[in-house]
Image (cartoon, rainbow, N blue to C red; front, top):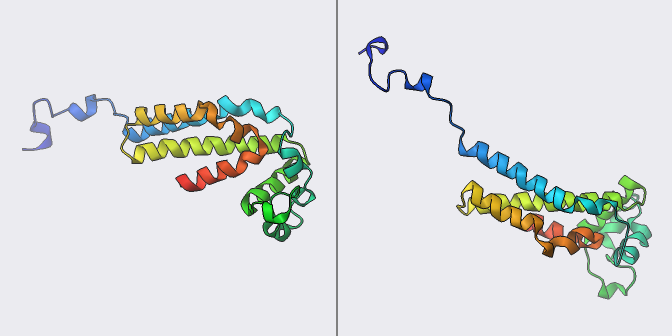
Length: 174
């Protein structure tokens, strides 16, 4: 039977049927939505200044005032306000602090913007993890949205020294 002689519901169905949106397109929209939600929920911290532990640990640490000595940043203790034996070693966190200092000339805005962006990335990774675990896109988006706005994250995002927690979350979820 040739194509021109075929009859019935299947004959012209593909031409008349609108194209379906696949689950990949829905996932992409949900991923965008939860990322924007995370940015919107915590974006207000970008205007904050250094506060709390960020003052002695970051702003007062001259080693973190630029990237002129990356080896010194990597090999030095994270905190300079205590004895080296009592300070954690956080080379990646310290390097990102030096990068933030370089980006903003010592202002707090680049630190906060980087932390909010990290939180958005972590939220996106939570969405992906939920999808890998078998959640439907809408369920994964609901879980990631709850994660994005949950108040337990405020300290890690708003406090510049909470960046280590955000970096751990990124690497754990990846």
